Image (tube, rainbow, N blue to C red; front, side, top):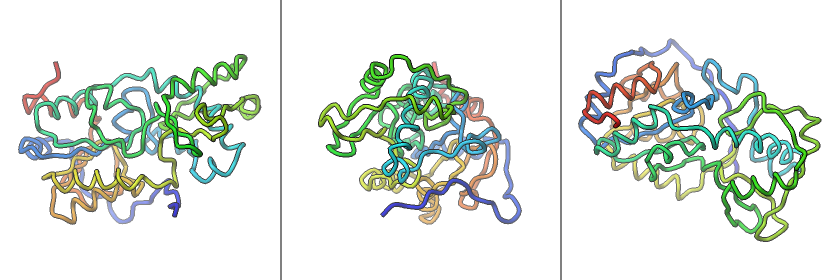
Length: 295
């Protein structure tokens, strides 16, 4: 059964207290055994906007849903035309100080695991190869018919060959690799089928809004949270249940939940501390305090 997409939430009641001090976060992380759950806010300093911040793309853009993608050829054409341009920006993006700080904390033994809601591959590029990609990754493609997977670079070459005169101009990149693109440009875009079975529909190997995260991946995340002593949320509004459930689970089982994010989150009531700071400088400061500064 597919879930109904949750694109936004409305906070009720007075905002819970927030701080700009990292003292409590540093104290908890220093004890080790911390799992990180990262969101789009961690990648904004790499030039990839988030969904729901002050400049979040949901203010202007409705992301592709699973139902629209599988049920509408026109929806697939629109997605791939726009993503064909947007992926080039994602592929060129470099890890920022926040990603490098997470890697440093992991390498020095402070973190027992990293779960990311992001699909940009920047944790891996920063040196955290075992980060669990909760929502998949844009650098892979899967066939919905034969289930074969292939590198996004291969599809990019095939799409370039099928669209030699395609000259769309991306006006705005979104966290899912989608961009704003005029409808008349979209209509000129030619799709390609799966190279393995020759007829199958290709989809990025990411979890669209309204699509369920594969159960084995969910179970792996629960195992990481259960084995940890605390959960540190970095740059996520926790709007979607796919990430929020781990926060609620951690709090329910008596683990410390710490959130570093710009603005309120849907999981604030579960947190013992809520820090409102930019992620790059905050995490760099944290690594310095703990003697795990990046080299």
